[in-house]
Image (cartoon, rainbow, N blue to C red; front, side):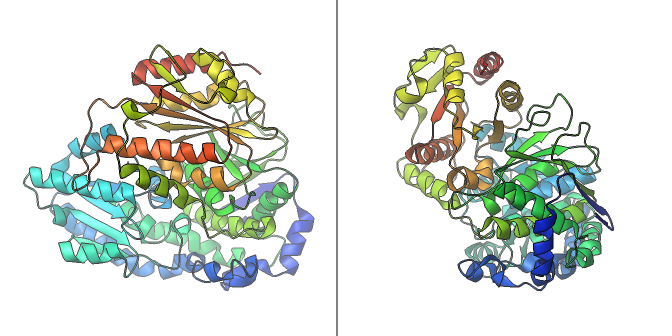
Length: 539
Protein backbone atom coordinates (compact mmCIF):
# COMPACT_ATOMS: atom_id res chain seq x y z
CA UNK A 1 0.00 0.00 0.00
CA UNK A 2 1.32 3.45 -0.78
CA UNK A 3 0.54 7.13 -0.48
CA UNK A 4 2.57 10.16 -1.43
CA UNK A 5 5.93 9.71 0.31
CA UNK A 6 4.78 6.57 2.13
CA UNK A 7 4.64 2.79 1.62
CA UNK A 8 3.52 -0.11 3.83
CA UNK A 9 3.99 -3.75 2.86
CA UNK A 10 2.54 -6.54 4.99
CA UNK A 11 3.47 -10.13 4.18
CA UNK A 12 0.92 -11.49 6.64
CA UNK A 13 -2.03 -9.16 5.97
CA UNK A 14 -4.85 -9.10 8.51
CA UNK A 15 -7.48 -8.70 5.81
CA UNK A 16 -10.47 -9.53 8.03
CA UNK A 17 -9.30 -7.02 10.61
CA UNK A 18 -8.79 -4.32 7.98
CA UNK A 19 -12.27 -4.99 6.61
CA UNK A 20 -13.73 -4.55 10.07
CA UNK A 21 -11.84 -1.28 10.54
CA UNK A 22 -13.13 -0.03 7.20
CA UNK A 23 -16.68 -1.07 8.06
CA UNK A 24 -16.44 0.73 11.42
CA UNK A 25 -15.15 3.85 9.64
CA UNK A 26 -12.22 4.01 12.04
CA UNK A 27 -9.96 6.07 9.76
CA UNK A 28 -12.47 8.82 9.03
CA UNK A 29 -13.68 8.91 12.64
CA UNK A 30 -10.09 9.24 13.86
CA UNK A 31 -9.45 12.06 11.38
CA UNK A 32 -12.57 13.74 12.80
CA UNK A 33 -11.17 13.28 16.35
CA UNK A 34 -13.91 10.90 17.50
CA UNK A 35 -13.00 10.21 21.13
CA UNK A 36 -15.40 7.26 21.38
CA UNK A 37 -13.17 4.96 19.28
CA UNK A 38 -11.52 3.35 22.31
CA UNK A 39 -14.57 2.84 24.49
CA UNK A 40 -16.28 4.79 27.27
CA UNK A 41 -13.48 4.38 29.82
CA UNK A 42 -10.97 5.99 27.46
CA UNK A 43 -13.27 8.72 26.16
CA UNK A 44 -12.46 11.44 28.75
CA UNK A 45 -8.72 11.12 28.11
CA UNK A 46 -9.04 10.68 24.34
CA UNK A 47 -11.22 13.78 24.05
CA UNK A 48 -8.25 15.95 25.10
CA UNK A 49 -5.49 13.96 23.39
CA UNK A 50 -6.37 14.01 19.69
CA UNK A 51 -4.75 17.29 18.71
CA UNK A 52 -1.98 15.34 16.92
CA UNK A 53 -4.37 14.29 14.15
CA UNK A 54 -4.10 17.60 12.26
CA UNK A 55 -0.76 18.93 13.56
CA UNK A 56 0.71 19.12 10.03
CA UNK A 57 -1.71 22.03 9.51
CA UNK A 58 -2.13 23.51 12.99
CA UNK A 59 1.62 23.73 13.71
CA UNK A 60 2.27 26.05 10.74
CA UNK A 61 2.23 29.29 12.79
CA UNK A 62 5.24 28.01 14.76
CA UNK A 63 7.48 28.09 11.70
CA UNK A 64 7.85 31.88 11.52
CA UNK A 65 8.56 32.07 15.27
CA UNK A 66 11.24 29.40 15.05
CA UNK A 67 12.84 31.01 12.00
CA UNK A 68 12.91 34.44 13.63
CA UNK A 69 14.49 33.16 16.85
CA UNK A 70 17.05 31.08 14.96
CA UNK A 71 18.11 34.18 12.98
CA UNK A 72 18.51 36.19 16.20
CA UNK A 73 20.58 33.48 17.85
CA UNK A 74 22.86 33.03 14.85
CA UNK A 75 23.40 36.77 14.66
CA UNK A 76 24.58 36.65 18.27
CA UNK A 77 26.89 33.71 17.55
CA UNK A 78 24.71 31.25 19.48
CA UNK A 79 24.73 28.14 17.34
CA UNK A 80 25.17 25.30 19.84
CA UNK A 81 21.71 23.97 20.71
CA UNK A 82 21.31 21.72 23.75
CA UNK A 83 17.96 20.03 24.38
CA UNK A 84 16.82 19.01 27.83
CA UNK A 85 13.83 16.70 27.44
CA UNK A 86 12.59 13.22 28.19
CA UNK A 87 10.61 10.65 26.19
CA UNK A 88 8.91 12.03 23.10
CA UNK A 89 10.27 15.49 23.90
CA UNK A 90 13.82 14.29 23.25
CA UNK A 91 13.35 11.32 20.92
CA UNK A 92 11.46 13.17 18.18
CA UNK A 93 14.01 16.03 17.89
CA UNK A 94 16.78 13.43 18.03
CA UNK A 95 15.49 11.51 14.98
CA UNK A 96 14.60 14.75 13.13
CA UNK A 97 18.09 16.20 13.50
CA UNK A 98 19.85 12.87 12.88
CA UNK A 99 17.89 12.45 9.65
CA UNK A 100 18.65 16.05 8.64
CA UNK A 101 22.31 15.56 9.63
CA UNK A 102 22.41 18.66 11.82
CA UNK A 103 24.00 18.73 15.30
CA UNK A 104 21.85 18.69 18.43
CA UNK A 105 23.09 17.82 21.91
CA UNK A 106 20.35 15.84 23.65
CA UNK A 107 20.28 15.64 27.45
CA UNK A 108 17.99 12.84 28.60
CA UNK A 109 20.24 11.46 31.32
CA UNK A 110 20.99 12.30 34.94
CA UNK A 111 24.44 10.71 34.93
CA UNK A 112 26.75 13.43 36.28
CA UNK A 113 29.45 12.78 33.68
CA UNK A 114 26.90 13.34 30.89
CA UNK A 115 25.76 16.65 32.36
CA UNK A 116 29.28 17.89 33.11
CA UNK A 117 30.52 17.01 29.61
CA UNK A 118 27.59 18.82 27.98
CA UNK A 119 28.13 21.94 30.07
CA UNK A 120 31.83 22.05 29.16
CA UNK A 121 31.05 21.98 25.45
CA UNK A 122 30.94 25.46 23.87
CA UNK A 123 29.09 27.10 26.76
CA UNK A 124 29.80 30.54 25.29
CA UNK A 125 27.81 29.57 22.17
CA UNK A 126 25.11 27.52 23.92
CA UNK A 127 21.35 27.91 24.00
CA UNK A 128 19.49 25.46 26.25
CA UNK A 129 16.02 24.37 25.12
CA UNK A 130 14.11 22.96 28.09
CA UNK A 131 11.09 20.91 27.02
CA UNK A 132 8.56 19.89 29.64
CA UNK A 133 4.77 19.97 29.65
CA UNK A 134 4.67 20.96 33.33
CA UNK A 135 8.26 21.84 34.21
CA UNK A 136 8.16 19.47 37.17
CA UNK A 137 9.98 16.60 35.44
CA UNK A 138 12.94 15.97 37.73
CA UNK A 139 15.44 15.42 34.91
CA UNK A 140 14.69 18.62 33.01
CA UNK A 141 14.39 20.70 36.17
CA UNK A 142 17.82 19.45 37.26
CA UNK A 143 19.38 20.18 33.86
CA UNK A 144 17.96 23.72 33.91
CA UNK A 145 19.36 24.38 37.37
CA UNK A 146 22.81 23.07 36.43
CA UNK A 147 22.98 25.20 33.30
CA UNK A 148 21.84 28.35 35.08
CA UNK A 149 24.67 27.90 37.59
CA UNK A 150 27.18 27.22 34.81
CA UNK A 151 26.08 30.31 32.90
CA UNK A 152 26.31 32.44 36.05
CA UNK A 153 29.76 31.06 36.92
CA UNK A 154 30.93 31.99 33.40
CA UNK A 155 29.53 35.52 33.66
CA UNK A 156 26.79 34.78 31.11
CA UNK A 157 23.22 35.99 31.50
CA UNK A 158 21.56 32.60 31.95
CA UNK A 159 17.91 33.51 31.33
CA UNK A 160 18.82 34.96 27.92
CA UNK A 161 20.20 31.55 26.94
CA UNK A 162 17.16 29.47 27.87
CA UNK A 163 14.28 28.67 25.54
CA UNK A 164 11.25 26.93 27.02
CA UNK A 165 8.76 24.59 25.38
CA UNK A 166 5.76 23.84 27.59
CA UNK A 167 1.98 23.76 27.76
CA UNK A 168 -0.11 26.95 28.05
CA UNK A 169 -0.74 27.93 31.66
CA UNK A 170 1.74 25.42 33.06
CA UNK A 171 3.82 26.20 36.17
CA UNK A 172 6.84 26.13 33.87
CA UNK A 173 5.37 28.82 31.61
CA UNK A 174 4.82 30.99 34.67
CA UNK A 175 8.37 30.36 35.94
CA UNK A 176 9.84 31.20 32.53
CA UNK A 177 7.97 34.50 32.39
CA UNK A 178 8.90 35.34 35.96
CA UNK A 179 12.61 34.63 35.45
CA UNK A 180 12.76 36.27 32.03
CA UNK A 181 13.84 33.37 29.84
CA UNK A 182 14.69 34.14 26.23
CA UNK A 183 11.55 32.69 24.64
CA UNK A 184 8.59 30.55 25.61
CA UNK A 185 6.96 28.34 22.98
CA UNK A 186 3.55 26.99 23.91
CA UNK A 187 2.66 23.57 22.57
CA UNK A 188 -0.78 22.15 21.85
CA UNK A 189 -2.05 20.94 25.25
CA UNK A 190 -4.32 18.41 23.52
CA UNK A 191 -1.35 16.28 22.47
CA UNK A 192 0.41 13.75 24.70
CA UNK A 193 4.20 13.64 24.85
CA UNK A 194 4.69 10.56 22.68
CA UNK A 195 2.48 12.06 19.95
CA UNK A 196 4.21 15.45 20.07
CA UNK A 197 6.77 15.11 17.25
CA UNK A 198 5.06 17.75 15.11
CA UNK A 199 4.25 20.13 17.98
CA UNK A 200 6.60 22.73 19.42
CA UNK A 201 8.26 19.90 21.38
CA UNK A 202 9.64 18.38 18.20
CA UNK A 203 9.83 21.38 15.90
CA UNK A 204 11.45 24.04 18.11
CA UNK A 205 14.72 22.29 19.09
CA UNK A 206 15.08 20.64 15.68
CA UNK A 207 14.37 23.89 13.85
CA UNK A 208 16.77 25.93 16.00
CA UNK A 209 19.43 23.28 15.33
CA UNK A 210 18.98 23.76 11.58
CA UNK A 211 16.55 21.06 10.42
CA UNK A 212 13.99 21.98 7.76
CA UNK A 213 10.88 21.57 9.90
CA UNK A 214 8.62 23.20 7.29
CA UNK A 215 9.44 20.34 4.95
CA UNK A 216 8.65 17.90 7.77
CA UNK A 217 5.14 19.36 8.07
CA UNK A 218 4.75 19.26 4.28
CA UNK A 219 5.63 15.56 4.28
CA UNK A 220 3.11 14.78 7.00
CA UNK A 221 0.35 16.89 5.49
CA UNK A 222 0.72 15.18 2.12
CA UNK A 223 -0.42 11.84 3.57
CA UNK A 224 -3.33 13.10 5.69
CA UNK A 225 -6.00 12.50 3.01
CA UNK A 226 -4.89 8.89 2.51
CA UNK A 227 -4.71 8.14 6.23
CA UNK A 228 -8.27 9.46 6.67
CA UNK A 229 -9.78 7.12 4.04
CA UNK A 230 -12.00 4.20 5.08
CA UNK A 231 -10.34 1.96 2.54
CA UNK A 232 -8.49 -1.33 2.48
CA UNK A 233 -5.72 0.62 0.74
CA UNK A 234 -5.14 2.86 3.77
CA UNK A 235 -1.55 2.09 4.90
CA UNK A 236 -2.28 3.09 8.52
CA UNK A 237 -5.11 0.56 8.70
CA UNK A 238 -2.82 -2.09 7.24
CA UNK A 239 -0.08 -1.38 9.80
CA UNK A 240 -2.49 -0.96 12.70
CA UNK A 241 -4.23 -4.22 11.80
CA UNK A 242 -0.91 -6.08 11.52
CA UNK A 243 0.05 -4.91 15.00
CA UNK A 244 -3.36 -5.36 16.62
CA UNK A 245 -4.23 -8.70 15.02
CA UNK A 246 -0.71 -9.87 15.76
CA UNK A 247 -1.30 -9.14 19.44
CA UNK A 248 -4.54 -11.09 19.36
CA UNK A 249 -2.66 -14.04 17.84
CA UNK A 250 -0.01 -14.01 20.59
CA UNK A 251 2.57 -11.84 18.85
CA UNK A 252 3.05 -9.43 21.73
CA UNK A 253 6.44 -8.12 20.59
CA UNK A 254 7.34 -5.82 17.70
CA UNK A 255 10.93 -6.04 16.50
CA UNK A 256 12.04 -2.80 14.84
CA UNK A 257 14.93 -2.90 12.39
CA UNK A 258 16.36 -0.11 10.27
CA UNK A 259 16.82 -1.06 6.62
CA UNK A 260 17.74 1.04 3.63
CA UNK A 261 16.02 4.34 4.31
CA UNK A 262 16.62 8.08 4.36
CA UNK A 263 15.51 8.17 8.01
CA UNK A 264 17.99 7.73 10.87
CA UNK A 265 17.17 6.35 14.32
CA UNK A 266 13.42 5.99 13.86
CA UNK A 267 13.28 2.82 15.96
CA UNK A 268 13.97 4.63 19.24
CA UNK A 269 11.10 7.05 18.62
CA UNK A 270 8.71 4.29 17.54
CA UNK A 271 9.76 2.30 20.60
CA UNK A 272 8.40 4.90 23.04
CA UNK A 273 5.26 5.45 20.95
CA UNK A 274 4.40 1.74 20.96
CA UNK A 275 5.40 0.95 24.55
CA UNK A 276 3.68 3.88 26.25
CA UNK A 277 0.58 3.70 24.05
CA UNK A 278 -0.14 -0.03 24.30
CA UNK A 279 1.58 -1.42 27.42
CA UNK A 280 -1.12 -1.42 30.08
CA UNK A 281 -3.81 -3.58 31.70
CA UNK A 282 -1.50 -6.59 31.30
CA UNK A 283 -1.62 -6.23 27.51
CA UNK A 284 0.30 -4.46 24.80
CA UNK A 285 3.15 -4.65 22.36
CA UNK A 286 6.75 -4.72 23.55
CA UNK A 287 8.94 -2.88 21.02
CA UNK A 288 12.45 -4.24 20.51
CA UNK A 289 14.77 -1.84 18.69
CA UNK A 290 17.43 -4.15 17.21
CA UNK A 291 19.01 -1.56 14.92
CA UNK A 292 19.70 -3.55 11.76
CA UNK A 293 17.91 -5.98 9.48
CA UNK A 294 20.70 -8.31 8.39
CA UNK A 295 20.96 -12.08 8.71
CA UNK A 296 23.42 -11.53 11.55
CA UNK A 297 21.29 -9.08 13.57
CA UNK A 298 20.30 -10.88 16.80
CA UNK A 299 16.56 -10.60 17.35
CA UNK A 300 15.88 -9.91 13.68
CA UNK A 301 17.14 -13.01 11.93
CA UNK A 302 15.42 -15.27 14.49
CA UNK A 303 12.35 -13.30 15.58
CA UNK A 304 10.26 -16.17 17.02
CA UNK A 305 6.52 -16.91 16.90
CA UNK A 306 5.66 -14.15 19.39
CA UNK A 307 7.04 -11.37 17.16
CA UNK A 308 5.85 -9.07 14.40
CA UNK A 309 9.03 -7.89 12.64
CA UNK A 310 8.86 -4.37 11.18
CA UNK A 311 11.54 -2.88 8.94
CA UNK A 312 11.92 0.87 8.53
CA UNK A 313 12.98 0.89 4.90
CA UNK A 314 13.96 -2.08 2.74
CA UNK A 315 15.42 -4.83 4.96
CA UNK A 316 18.66 -6.62 4.18
CA UNK A 317 17.14 -9.92 5.29
CA UNK A 318 13.46 -10.80 4.87
CA UNK A 319 11.86 -12.80 7.68
CA UNK A 320 8.47 -14.51 8.15
CA UNK A 321 5.56 -12.17 8.90
CA UNK A 322 7.54 -9.11 7.80
CA UNK A 323 6.03 -5.62 7.73
CA UNK A 324 7.90 -2.87 5.88
CA UNK A 325 7.17 0.83 6.35
CA UNK A 326 9.06 3.42 4.37
CA UNK A 327 8.81 7.04 3.37
CA UNK A 328 9.78 10.52 4.41
CA UNK A 329 10.16 11.21 8.12
CA UNK A 330 7.08 13.45 8.37
CA UNK A 331 4.96 10.82 6.63
CA UNK A 332 6.29 8.09 8.92
CA UNK A 333 5.49 10.10 12.03
CA UNK A 334 1.88 10.51 10.91
CA UNK A 335 1.58 6.89 9.75
CA UNK A 336 2.84 5.35 12.97
CA UNK A 337 0.86 7.63 15.27
CA UNK A 338 -2.32 6.74 13.39
CA UNK A 339 -1.51 3.02 13.21
CA UNK A 340 -0.68 2.73 16.92
CA UNK A 341 -3.93 4.49 17.82
CA UNK A 342 -5.75 1.96 15.60
CA UNK A 343 -3.86 -0.93 17.20
CA UNK A 344 -4.90 0.35 20.63
CA UNK A 345 -8.54 0.00 19.63
CA UNK A 346 -7.93 -3.60 18.54
CA UNK A 347 -5.98 -4.49 21.70
CA UNK A 348 -8.66 -2.94 23.88
CA UNK A 349 -6.66 -0.28 25.72
CA UNK A 350 -6.58 3.50 25.94
CA UNK A 351 -3.57 4.51 23.82
CA UNK A 352 -3.34 7.96 25.37
CA UNK A 353 -2.78 7.30 29.08
CA UNK A 354 0.34 6.02 30.85
CA UNK A 355 -0.81 4.79 34.24
CA UNK A 356 2.49 3.23 35.33
CA UNK A 357 4.96 5.96 34.38
CA UNK A 358 4.29 7.86 37.59
CA UNK A 359 5.24 4.84 39.73
CA UNK A 360 8.95 5.19 39.00
CA UNK A 361 8.83 8.97 39.54
CA UNK A 362 7.20 8.54 42.96
CA UNK A 363 9.70 5.87 43.96
CA UNK A 364 12.64 8.11 43.04
CA UNK A 365 11.12 11.12 44.82
CA UNK A 366 10.61 9.16 48.02
CA UNK A 367 14.21 7.98 47.96
CA UNK A 368 15.46 11.53 47.38
CA UNK A 369 13.87 12.65 50.65
CA UNK A 370 16.86 10.84 52.15
CA UNK A 371 19.29 10.66 49.22
CA UNK A 372 20.66 7.12 48.87
CA UNK A 373 24.18 6.18 47.91
CA UNK A 374 25.69 2.95 46.69
CA UNK A 375 27.45 2.72 50.04
CA UNK A 376 24.08 2.70 51.85
CA UNK A 377 22.72 -0.15 49.73
CA UNK A 378 22.26 -3.66 51.03
CA UNK A 379 25.30 -5.89 50.77
CA UNK A 380 25.88 -7.59 47.42
CA UNK A 381 25.20 -11.29 47.09
CA UNK A 382 28.79 -11.56 45.88
CA UNK A 383 31.56 -9.59 44.21
CA UNK A 384 33.64 -10.68 41.24
CA UNK A 385 36.32 -8.33 39.96
CA UNK A 386 34.78 -4.93 39.24
CA UNK A 387 31.19 -6.19 39.49
CA UNK A 388 29.02 -6.30 42.58
CA UNK A 389 25.98 -8.56 42.11
CA UNK A 390 22.67 -7.82 43.85
CA UNK A 391 19.72 -10.19 43.73
CA UNK A 392 17.67 -12.56 45.81
CA UNK A 393 18.62 -16.17 46.35
CA UNK A 394 15.63 -17.40 44.37
CA UNK A 395 16.94 -15.80 41.17
CA UNK A 396 20.66 -16.33 41.78
CA UNK A 397 20.16 -19.97 42.76
CA UNK A 398 23.64 -20.28 44.24
CA UNK A 399 25.45 -18.34 41.51
CA UNK A 400 28.90 -17.10 42.51
CA UNK A 401 30.21 -15.63 39.25
CA UNK A 402 28.92 -12.96 36.87
CA UNK A 403 28.52 -15.59 34.15
CA UNK A 404 26.46 -17.80 36.48
CA UNK A 405 24.33 -14.82 37.54
CA UNK A 406 23.56 -13.95 33.90
CA UNK A 407 22.75 -17.59 33.20
CA UNK A 408 20.41 -17.58 36.22
CA UNK A 409 18.42 -14.53 35.07
CA UNK A 410 18.21 -15.99 31.55
CA UNK A 411 16.80 -19.16 33.08
CA UNK A 412 14.26 -17.07 35.02
CA UNK A 413 12.71 -15.50 31.89
CA UNK A 414 9.09 -16.75 31.69
CA UNK A 415 7.73 -18.70 28.73
CA UNK A 416 7.02 -16.34 25.79
CA UNK A 417 8.80 -13.65 27.81
CA UNK A 418 11.68 -11.25 27.37
CA UNK A 419 14.80 -9.99 29.10
CA UNK A 420 15.30 -6.24 29.59
CA UNK A 421 18.78 -4.80 30.11
CA UNK A 422 18.64 -1.36 31.79
CA UNK A 423 21.89 0.60 32.02
CA UNK A 424 22.08 3.65 34.30
CA UNK A 425 25.35 4.70 32.74
CA UNK A 426 26.85 7.31 30.40
CA UNK A 427 25.40 6.71 26.92
CA UNK A 428 28.62 7.94 25.28
CA UNK A 429 31.46 7.07 27.62
CA UNK A 430 29.87 3.70 28.50
CA UNK A 431 28.51 2.98 25.01
CA UNK A 432 29.95 -0.54 25.20
CA UNK A 433 27.00 -1.43 27.43
CA UNK A 434 24.72 -1.50 24.38
CA UNK A 435 26.70 -4.47 23.05
CA UNK A 436 25.21 -6.60 25.82
CA UNK A 437 21.88 -6.87 23.96
CA UNK A 438 23.21 -8.54 20.81
CA UNK A 439 25.70 -10.58 22.84
CA UNK A 440 22.87 -12.17 24.84
CA UNK A 441 20.22 -12.14 22.11
CA UNK A 442 22.45 -14.21 19.84
CA UNK A 443 22.20 -17.22 22.12
CA UNK A 444 18.77 -17.11 23.80
CA UNK A 445 15.36 -18.15 22.36
CA UNK A 446 13.55 -14.95 23.41
CA UNK A 447 13.80 -11.24 22.69
CA UNK A 448 16.27 -9.06 24.61
CA UNK A 449 15.75 -5.30 24.95
CA UNK A 450 18.23 -2.63 25.98
CA UNK A 451 17.73 0.87 27.33
CA UNK A 452 19.80 3.55 29.02
CA UNK A 453 18.27 4.89 32.21
CA UNK A 454 16.54 7.11 33.07
CA UNK A 455 15.78 7.57 29.35
CA UNK A 456 13.86 4.28 29.11
CA UNK A 457 11.59 5.25 32.04
CA UNK A 458 9.78 7.58 29.63
CA UNK A 459 9.57 4.87 26.97
CA UNK A 460 9.57 1.12 27.62
CA UNK A 461 9.31 1.74 31.38
CA UNK A 462 5.52 1.98 31.01
CA UNK A 463 5.35 -1.41 29.27
CA UNK A 464 7.62 -3.11 31.83
CA UNK A 465 5.15 -2.41 34.60
CA UNK A 466 1.84 -2.27 32.73
CA UNK A 467 2.21 -4.66 29.79
CA UNK A 468 2.33 -8.43 29.62
CA UNK A 469 3.84 -9.63 32.92
CA UNK A 470 6.46 -11.87 31.29
CA UNK A 471 9.69 -9.91 31.68
CA UNK A 472 12.91 -10.40 33.60
CA UNK A 473 15.15 -7.43 34.33
CA UNK A 474 18.87 -6.77 34.65
CA UNK A 475 19.90 -3.35 35.85
CA UNK A 476 23.43 -1.99 35.56
CA UNK A 477 24.65 0.88 37.72
CA UNK A 478 28.11 2.38 37.88
CA UNK A 479 30.44 4.09 40.32
CA UNK A 480 30.42 7.88 40.19
CA UNK A 481 33.93 9.31 40.39
CA UNK A 482 33.12 13.00 39.83
CA UNK A 483 29.68 13.95 41.11
CA UNK A 484 27.84 17.16 40.32
CA UNK A 485 25.47 19.10 42.53
CA UNK A 486 21.88 19.84 41.52
CA UNK A 487 21.73 23.52 42.48
CA UNK A 488 18.99 24.32 44.97
CA UNK A 489 18.31 20.66 45.69
CA UNK A 490 19.52 18.51 48.62
CA UNK A 491 20.97 15.86 46.32
CA UNK A 492 23.56 15.45 43.60
CA UNK A 493 23.15 14.07 40.08
CA UNK A 494 24.88 10.91 41.28
CA UNK A 495 22.32 10.47 44.03
CA UNK A 496 19.48 11.28 41.62
CA UNK A 497 20.41 8.67 39.02
CA UNK A 498 20.97 6.09 41.75
CA UNK A 499 17.55 6.83 43.26
CA UNK A 500 15.94 6.47 39.83
CA UNK A 501 17.69 3.15 39.29
CA UNK A 502 16.95 1.48 42.62
CA UNK A 503 13.46 2.99 42.72
CA UNK A 504 12.43 1.47 39.40
CA UNK A 505 14.06 -1.88 40.14
CA UNK A 506 12.26 -1.97 43.48
CA UNK A 507 8.90 -1.53 41.75
CA UNK A 508 9.67 -4.34 39.31
CA UNK A 509 10.79 -6.61 42.15
CA UNK A 510 7.68 -5.80 44.21
CA UNK A 511 5.54 -6.76 41.22
CA UNK A 512 7.12 -10.22 41.35
CA UNK A 513 9.43 -9.98 38.34
CA UNK A 514 12.85 -11.68 38.38
CA UNK A 515 15.47 -8.95 38.83
CA UNK A 516 19.24 -8.59 39.16
CA UNK A 517 21.49 -5.59 39.54
CA UNK A 518 25.13 -5.40 38.55
CA UNK A 519 27.02 -2.47 40.06
CA UNK A 520 30.28 -1.62 38.32
CA UNK A 521 32.90 -0.34 40.77
CA UNK A 522 35.05 0.36 37.71
CA UNK A 523 32.84 1.02 34.71
CA UNK A 524 35.25 0.06 31.94
CA UNK A 525 36.53 -3.08 33.64
CA UNK A 526 33.03 -4.06 34.75
CA UNK A 527 31.59 -3.75 31.25
CA UNK A 528 34.41 -5.89 29.90
CA UNK A 529 33.51 -8.53 32.48
CA UNK A 530 29.81 -8.40 31.64
CA UNK A 531 30.42 -8.63 27.88
CA UNK A 532 32.76 -11.56 28.34
CA UNK A 533 30.19 -13.34 30.52
CA UNK A 534 27.31 -12.54 28.12
CA UNK A 535 29.22 -14.13 25.25
CA UNK A 536 29.45 -17.39 27.19
CA UNK A 537 25.80 -17.72 28.26
CA UNK A 538 24.00 -20.55 26.50
CA UNK A 539 20.47 -21.95 26.80
